[in-house]
Image 1 (cartoon, one colour):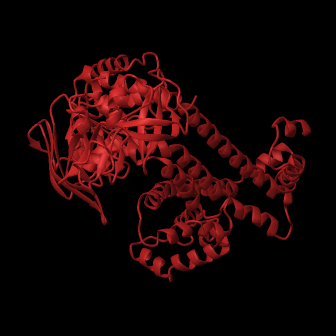
Image 2 (cartoon, rainbow over the protein chains, first blue to last red):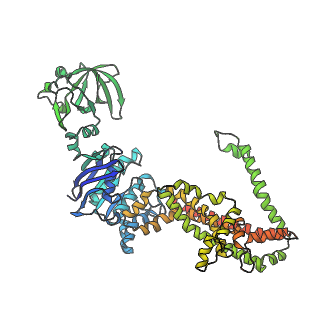
Image 3 (tube, chains in turn green, cyan):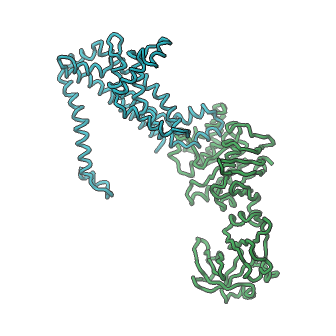
Amino acid sequence: MYVEMKGICKKFGNYDAARDISFGIEKGKLAAILGPSGSGKTTILRILAGLETQDKGDIIVEGKVINDIPASKRGIGFVFQNYALFRYMTVYDNIAFGLKVQKAGKEKIDERVREMISLIGLEGLEKRYPDQLSGGQRQRVAFARAIAPNPQLLLLDEPFAAIDAKVRKELRSWLKEMIQKVGITSIFVTHDQEEAVEVADDIIIINEGNLEQIGTPSEIYKHPQTPFVAKFIGSSTVLEDLSGFKGFEEIGKGKKVIVRPEFVEAFKSDNKKFHDLIPAAEEGVIEKIEFRGSYLEVTLKVGDVSLITNRSLERRNISIGEKMYVLLHRIYVFEDGTAKRYKNSLLKDVDIELM
Amino acid sequence: MKKAGKGKGKVVIPGFGMTMGITVSMLSLLILIPLASVMAYSFKMSLPEFAELVTRPNIVQAFITSILCAFIAAVINSVFGVIIAWVLVRYEFFGKRLIDGMIELPFALPTAVAGITLTKMYSDNGFLGKAFERIGIEVAYTKIGIVIAMVFIGIPFVVRAIQPVLEKLPRSCEEAGLMLGASRSVVFRKIIFPEIMPPLLTGFGLALARGIGEYGSVIYISGNSEKNKTQVVSYIIMQKLNSGNVDYEGAAAIALILLIISFVMLFVINVIQHVASKRTSA
């Protein structure tokens, strides 16, 4: 492991910002620390940077314990949420700052700054001040400034939070591409699961100061290890009692069950494709239909539970109050602290995901 | 006038005509007309008379004393003003609000009260005066005394100018400097100082202008001795109006010079601020 945190604890008064956090990241990887706001994710990043001091635990970078090295000597690049560009310096001087502090030669500084400016594609804007740049341009400058002194690790705190939705998607792929190009080990903090899944190689999920799970996006999606992760990743519905549903009789009462929209299939009674599956389905009534841009989010009432499914816009029109068959083909059940996948037993060999 | 009021489009609270009228009347009655009369009175003198008056040694000396002491006081205020503003913005401590409120005391306190109190404390039988005397420094009735009085009345200008800017300066800017490998002193010099420079200049300028024209708090502690060169300009003006034959023109002539100094300083401050704001935004 290139970067390692071992048993990190941090308290702010009575509030636990980090409880025995341990994880490792391999060299060259782009990792996301994901969690809801107030979960302690930024604190972990700041401890790693040396901007906060942990109460307990070790930080190891390249095999060296760096606990006692001050922030300014850790050789870690940091991109702040508000970018924290120096207002009274031009784009050029902002990027050159770290190199000047290292007392690099003038020519070397100039060469590196020009390289950075062309990397971020802001040629011609060297003499602008930060207030004269757009949000996206500012982020690029903040990125260039952080990596100009060749840090061994790059940390980014909510790098996309201050940018409007339209530019955000574009910047995400830009940042991922940049980090791959530079080949720097990076960790970013985000509360947006979509962002984490899209950008990161590894995701570290934090909740209330606890590390919930670490893994690749697909691992976390397919094998959530805690109820929190299962709920947090994907838009899930939590059900307390599923005993009335066909095909899941084996699951006893009183167990927490998590259902994702992908696990629910709703079809009209005259749908030939699903006709054979009617015995495994329940009857439901459409309660709510929400347009989500490229699909519909449909809420169906089945007995006294509400289930959500996503429906392609290519399929037939539906309306509120309409009766449909609702087929629940897969669920997560929490037993002894882990999530187990269950398949609708009436489906036998039919794999609904391949249909 | 009406056109200008309507040009802004619909506003929630109407009454441009009335508020503008009040503004212009207040400005005229309280500022413009009195200032113009100062000029009018001083222009009653011929130019040679004017030149002769303002180049009299005691008057030139008074200007030197006023400007020099006010300058030193403004420099001292700039240093301590930054420190006080820093403490008030960056740290939480018991009694912070009380201290924050006390900053304005020199504005609210009658200057005569401040003058008498400072004189009593720093005279050779006051407790601070005694302490200074032991190390061979005389404070009251010297230029040091004048500087102390001017520091007292000028400190709020600097603190209140810098405070809002420091409050707005995100801590992440300093942290960004640290993360790039800068030492604390480099962070202060290269990141924080450029931010507080424009308001510091404003505060410095206002403290200086106030110091040059100060009367109430200075005249008690200065001793007003021509021999010791502790007469300040406003004392000279007062003298002209106090003595048996009131020399209103002479007083106005000296006042005019003070007025010009104030205007020049305000102008310079504004130019500097304009340039500074132009540097960072489009």
